[in-house]
Image 1 (spheres, rainbow, N blue to C red):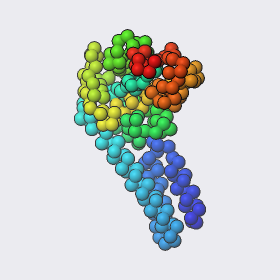
Image 2 (cartoon, rainbow, N blue to C red):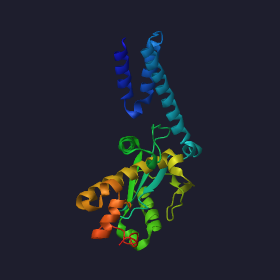
Image 3 (cartoon, one colour):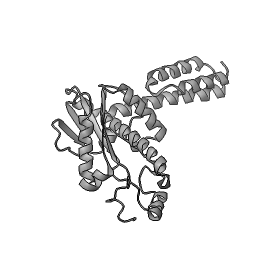
Image 4 (cartoon, rainbow, N blue to C red):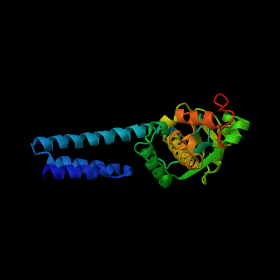
Length: 260
């Protein structure tokens, strides 16, 4: 096999979908075995890259399995739900929450707190979570609710909505850092839970992608504020537009007092 053929095989293997990580590992290992006796420098270099790729897959799978600590600790519960919010800090738009029940033991490579995941990967993970979850629920509260009731109540209420919107009632809810009032299900509060629990991380991804898509739709209606790039946060372009033309319908009046 010539170097070009080996390189093309590696490109093909690298292009396999996220969830086919076992197949990806097996194909890298088979390729390494096939070219192990070849002492050409270029082949040795590609073999080393393939071995490094296998090592990275193993490290990533281990990282995700370590994020199953709480799911494993409470494995006596059949349906464990993670819930998280996105949009506490923006000057505009709703707060969005998600609740996700993952199948027990499901490993989703690159699953993490949505803030640690690049946008293109978030979109891919969104599709994987939606396709593989036992149940997904969404909750939301508008800027008007936030202005009237305050961001904390809006957050708690939206999280409860997300849990209650699941088509499978959970036995246990894992929550990022807070405890939800008025929820008649056992809860476990986990500080930095979106980085420590696969269920909360999955909810974080679903909430983030859902809210980002919504803000991009708002950008078409209110292009002056550049919502498609700042998602309602106070970027320089957003703040400049606020000062020049004032707020639009979806701005949180209680959040923009210092800018208008």
